[in-house]
Length: 212
Image (cartoon, rainbow, N blue to C red; front, side):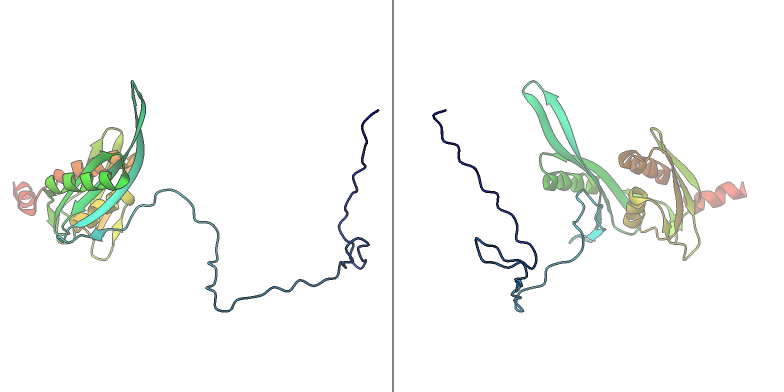
């Protein structure tokens, strides 16, 4: 054949205790690591998991308690293609018995939260309370979601899931027992909780009913 074949030389790693005939390096060479004492220590721990985590209630400049319950990415199929957007479920309350919620949608998360906050502030309702708890037991329903709300004694705390807890924090309810049945969709759970709280009777109405 007219082609010259060149045999490739295999390069083997140096064996411990022997010198490499080509480089003269020994397998026992020590590796010295230079440590910079002035450098900031690297953070320890595993990688942070991605995904949305519910935020803690934040008190705004107007004195209202704002809580972002859930953020979802939604899609709308149009003639030109698929449009992606974000929906934010927000609960707003004054901590004194008034609370509201709203669902805002926008192309960005910040805009969706802002729209939801403005909508929640406009639809705040007054809830009948007895001290730091509700007046009586009630069952709220919305779609397939059912939320059972029971009054509790002082010191019990808020025994509730995330969406229900956000409403209780916004309304100023600090002692209550709750249980979510069937669906755990945040939107339906929030609507079911509001439906139940809106049907609460005041203490005067309960006294009249009891006396009659």
